[in-house]
Structure formats: C-alpha cells, structure tokens
Image 1 (tube, one colour):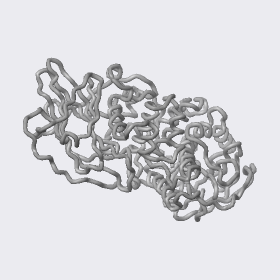
Image 2 (cartoon, rainbow, N blue to C red; image 1 turned 180 degrees about the vertical axis):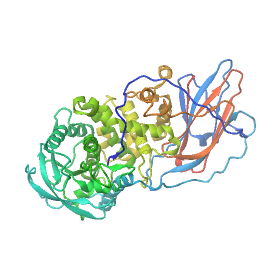
Image 3 (tube, helix red, strand yellow; image 1 turned 45 degrees about the vertical axis):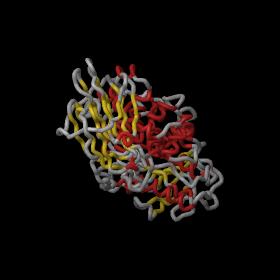
Image 4 (cartoon, rainbow, N blue to C red; image 1 turned 30 degrees about the vertical axis):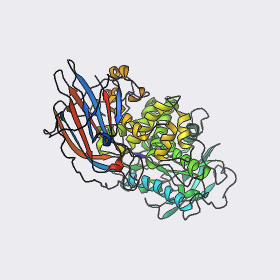
Length: 550
C-alpha cells in the first residue's frame, strides 16, 4: 500500500554537496577505561569494532601537534525481524582518558510501541497477512480455486470483485466493475459506482499506455528489476481495479491516504479471494464530504502506487510461489525494494509522461521526504522495524536509503542496479540472510558503514580521501538536494551529530539498524579521548563504527 501525503511543488533535484557539523556536549561524565581499544587511523580510514571485545571502550589518540576529527557511530546491528523489534538501552560516555576503569553501568533493556496511523497500519497488516498465509501453508504451493478465466478480459465486459471492507481485511464488500482497458500485461477495471467527475476514458487509456510502454512502462521496469509476477488465474494480465471502496478505507483521510494495495489473499482460496493477480487503487472523488480526492492528486499517485505495489506482488510470487520457501521477504526489505521501484520509475520514465515534466520529482520526492525524516533522527527510528510497527514514513525512509546504498555499493550498474535487485527478490532467502548472501558481507559490517555514509554523504573533500567508496551514495547528492529546497527541507542536511570536544554523556535506545552519531574533535595538545558504550541487551549486537574525517 502506497502511503501518500500532499507534497509541495517540484523539488530541484541536483548534485554536489557540502559538509558541516553541529555541536553539543552533555554534563561531565566520570569516564575511564582499563583496556580501551586504540583507534589509530589515517584520514579517510575506518574501523568497525565489537565493544564487547574491549569492555565497551575505545580510545581516540591525541593528535600530536595537529588536530583530528573522528565520526563515531554506535549502532544496533542485529537484523532479525521480530514482532516487537530488537533494541537495547545504551549509555555512551566520552571524555579525556584517565587511568582506572569504573564498574560497567547496568542499564535495563527498553522497548515500546507506537499507535499506528490508518494508512500505515493497513499496509503493515497486509504484509503480516502475507506472512501468515505462507507460514500456515508451510512449503506447499498456496491453493487456488480453478481459474475463473483462461484468456484476458474482454474490453467492455463487467465482473464482480471482492474488496477489503475494512483495514483488517476481515470483511469484504462486493463491487461490479467494467473493463475499460485491456492490454498485453494489464487490464484496468473501473467500478460502475465510481464518481462521475473522476477518471474518464482518456485518463484510463493514458494510464494503460504508461503501464504497457515496451521501453519504459511500469510493468517492464518492475519485471526487469525484480522478476516476473504470477499468473495463477491464467488470464495473462494483472488486473487493476479502480474503486471508491479503496477511498473509503482511509476514513476522513486527515493525516494519510490509502492510495492502493496488493492483497495476497487473492492468490488463495480463502474467503474474499478474487482468485487472481489484482492491484487496487482509489479513484478521484473531489466532492466527497469525508475524504475529498482531487483528480490531479489521484492521477499523479496512480502510477507511483502501482510500481510500488507491483514489487510486492512480484516478491510474493518469487518467494512464496516460485520457490515454495514457506517464507515472504521481511517487511523492512520488502518496503525498501518497493520504494526503490518508485525511484526506478522516476529514472526511467520519459519526463513528458510526468507532472512538472519531472519523473524524478513525481516518483521519488516522497522517498526523499521520508529519507529526510529518517536522517533528522535516526536514533529514534528503526531500519529493521518490528513486524508490529506502524510502518512510519521515517522507517520507510530508512528502508529506501539502505536499499539505495546497497545498490550503489554492490550492483554493477549502480544507477539502476537491476541485476542486483533481481538477486535480492529471486531467492528463498529473506531479510538479513538475503542481504548477507547477496553482498558477501556481514550485516554487522554493513549497518555501521551505512550509518557512516549517512553523515559523510555529499562531503566531496572527505570522499576524495576515503579509503572506501562505501561512505557515500553514488547516485544521489542528498546534501545538495536538501540545500536547494529550503522551503521543503528546513535544514541543509538533517543529520547533525553532536560534537564532543571535552565531554559527552548520552543515554537512550539503539533500535535495530540504527543508532547515534558523534563527532570527536581533538586539538593540538589535547589528550587521548576515551569512549565507553554500555548496553542492556547483547542480542542487539551493538557495534562501534569509527572513521577519521580529518
């Protein structure tokens, strides 16, 4: 389900970047370490350490006659997706090195839940239902009733459909719709009770042409990047049902709108199934008293929502049906890939087919906003969110950023990266195991590297000295984009770590895949600096990532 929010006019999507840091020190801690792990790095070099190996302590050496700046990230690197999420309380102390080591701090583990919003909760519920369906069937192919059709629908024909009647999909409503477009890969049905001032025949024909375009059509983009969808009903097409019943799921739509969704129950014999591959989307309804949807808004979101949800349909087929793995992709990675699909639409579709003559603006600006939300406070948002998460937009930002970074680092073609994304989808692996097997790198290494890149991104001076290319996004210059759009992004770059010059004291919670960033500055004549990380839950697999910036 594509969660949408109204966005301002076009963004300026450009390149190049600049770097800066903020400041802030906590109260003076009592800090000493018996055997801190020494961090001796040249500018551009980095190291990732397990704090358990050094009693939680590391030491930044004195800079001699010069000065030094190090970025330190403390992150939770366990990528297992659980119902409540993996996290740990932490305490991070930093200060001038002294001799004796105090007893380790004992900090109890911390956990919590946030109340879901309507659209976000509905989306996550659909992914949870997929997992429940597959787990219930084990490694058996999901059962399907005999196909209701063995040929594509006939243009102008009508058909009845079941549509989720609530956001739990625990009840269904029946609609009758007419096939308004039939092409090689898609058939678009319009609910017979859709508002009269909504989509007309030209709108639907244009939408069908965009889905089917043999060069940059949405179907081509998704299948190239992720693999083939199923065709269990044997009709050769994906059905797109445009109905006001989707609008109704959003309620008053005051905070978010359910723009559309894929429901895996349609590929089973359970109650409410339509026994085939279907994608649902809202319709324009500008006169609605409860949830007015302008035509321009619905038209702009329709292709973006389709390319997002189609990835979910393909992923379900590749994992649960083709490979019979008894699994679906973890929600966080599944979402990251669907948001990456949006970006691919923005990069591959001709600008003449998009609003503002900018497809990157139409397809990817939501991803940029989500990323900005995440980078504004990575400590408070999961990368590997719990199964019961609300699927917040900041978490979506983390999901997209991580997939984007993986493609940048491990795909032969880092801009599109389709061979790499097909490997991520076309496998019986899922979640952290999938990522590790596709990259050949431990998640406990990838996560700190990614978090470092989230700060050093766009710092052209640092990139020239960095010993690895992993500390940047090769296809986006996020600092430049955020700087050029101050009305949309309040800060030039939202990730502004505190700066430690003498002392630092911070406590909080490390959430799976995320953590805290700190700049450690040493001037000529300063002593070495000790940093001690104490956590309350070893399962979270906390790690130090350190890179020398200057």
